[in-house]
Length: 207
Image (cartoon, rainbow, N blue to C red; front, side):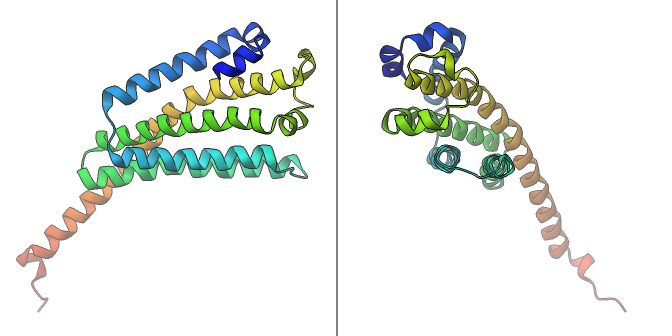
């Protein structure tokens, strides 16, 4: 990202707030990651979320869908998988620890690592597949405002990043909370079932 701004300073000139938002978010991410000290489960969860983000970005940028409906369905499907993954990650951790806060925490930490991976991949393809990205973004609003088309590809990446760095952690907390609640409900049902089975008076045969 820094190299992109050095090579194309016009991106910062035209989108200062967007660029600043991304860098501030990254700093907060790093501080949060360092302070909370994630366990291996959080790291693995983050790698999984990052993988899904990479697949999502690759599908969006490298597959030419024939219709807008196909593009929308693809995007919604990937977002569903990512959101569901936050819940599953939290569910597993909550079920193991019987503590919903632990579940939400690992879901949140997974979103931090996953989003960083997505940002790195997004900017990487701008460098490696610059011509492809220029072609893909030709009809995007604001494209003609940049004399150098490659500069617009980095602006677009910063614009997308500014949304993801804010939305991803929030969604991870919400979906992590839902996954944690489901885990607690199942734990409660399991506990009541075990109590029922071990209660001699409730297992008395009829007649």
